[in-house]
Length: 259
Ligand SMILES: Cc1cc2nc3c(=O)[nH]c(=O)nc-3n(C[C@H](O)[C@H](O)[C@H](O)COP(=O)(O)OP(=O)(O)OC[C@H]3O[C@@H](n4cnc5c(N)ncnc54)[C@H](O)[C@@H]3O)c2cc1C
Image (tube, rainbow, N blue to C red; front, top):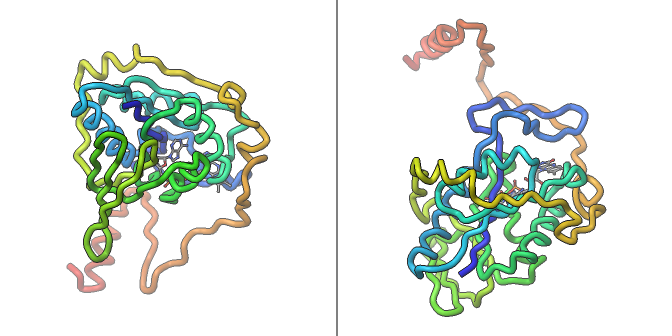
């Protein structure tokens, strides 16, 4: 089975989050890593093909060319190749524009199954898979905690507040998995060494037949009007770390009789 896994390079959770004042976009120039939720989708794709003994796993992404460094983790885990859509005209893509560019790339791959992680750790929308499935006109099963494929049918078990829903859909389909579905493998040393040699195709919007005016800022339907830090919560105190933050926190907790 040919499985396309949508993956994103995101800022490392350990790095500070700042907003670019001019564009009002998240500053994504910090160290980047593979979106942690996407490791579950890659793992599931690898397991499905290992069970059937055949197939291909292709990672599909929209992002800057430097995203390849983070996406290689997926190749090191065992994915076969990467297709990265990278284009100046795609900068500033909101959900509508991102889903358009990704759907164009996925149409070209013509995969039996398209897998997504549950959310991006930088935007946390947990909605891109629905937009892409709609554009591809394919059935979608989201929040999948257990996945099986037989013949041309896919079955996903979804966790709900009251238990589980079991949903079947014909292939080709789109599935978003949760982080409860599996434990992603660690890349082996051999996998890490071999990752750089696997095909990493960087393509432009025109390469995938996408109209540049429907991507990036031009194709976006969202305007960020204003951004502000969250208001302080109740009886709280902000401690700036000038080297004495630990002592100040202890003093604060003692004052509140919490230590
Ligand atoms: C005005 C505006 C401008 C923006 N500009 C930028 C920008 O310049 N650069 C930028 O990175 N983001 C930008 N964003 C954020 C971007 O639109 C979202 O990251 C994107 O729509 C996906 O939404 P999400 O991150 O909430 O993903 P979710 O819906 O939470 O992600 C679900 C899953 O989708 C997949 N996925 C998410 N993003 C990608 C991707 N790019 N490629 C492949 N798979 C993916 C992953 O499998 C992930 O687990 C902008 C948003 C707005 C509103």
